Image 1 (cartoon, helix red, strand yellow):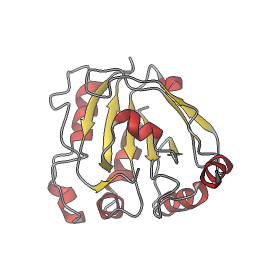
Image 2 (tube, helix red, strand yellow):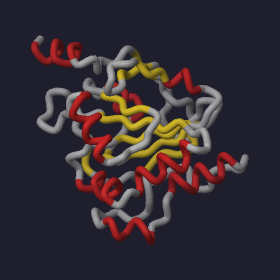
Image 3 (tube, helix red, strand yellow):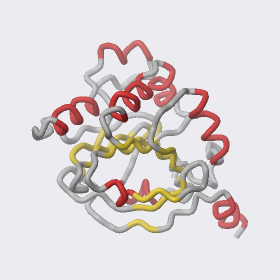
Amino acid sequence: MRLKSMILASGVALAFVLPAAAAPGGRAPDFVVADTSGRPVKLADYRGKFVVLEWTNPECPFVRKHYNSQNMQGLQKEWGAKDVVWLTINSTNASHSEYKTPEEMEKWMRAQEAAPKATLIDGTSATARAYAAKNTPHMFVIDPAGKIIYDGAIDDKRSTNPADVKIANNYVRAALTEATAGKPVSIASTTPYGCTLKY
């Protein structure tokens, strides 16, 4: 009961998730999740646009690799400028020691100079379960019709070394570059790497 009260008080309760096949070619599960300011964010509101879902956890060294190198922020800014909606989601369960309150998450993102459209707090982990998100970071790209066109790792360098970012094949950039040019995504699924998502 105490946990439920904590989740509701922080404004991070998931309103709903509609079941769907969370895999390339399948429809992206809809959701309503509160952002760090408590505003409900609906995936359905962005139908007609490309959307990136980035699962994150500031405690994860793989996440820090991509933020300390400015790789993640660079992608957020690059594609945000091209009208791609970037949603960063922290699905660390509110019962876990690595859970961040909305205020803590907002402070961390601001310190990183991150630039997503919104940072969402999925304290029940329900949205992560709907997508079968496994790691942080785990990336999804959704097309304007609401279908998943990429699911997997951010790139092909499965390390915590920030220097590897410069020599990596960035799967998210490649998928967005092809899709926004009207081409099929040549690599639509990869195995994500990083820290285990804290359900």
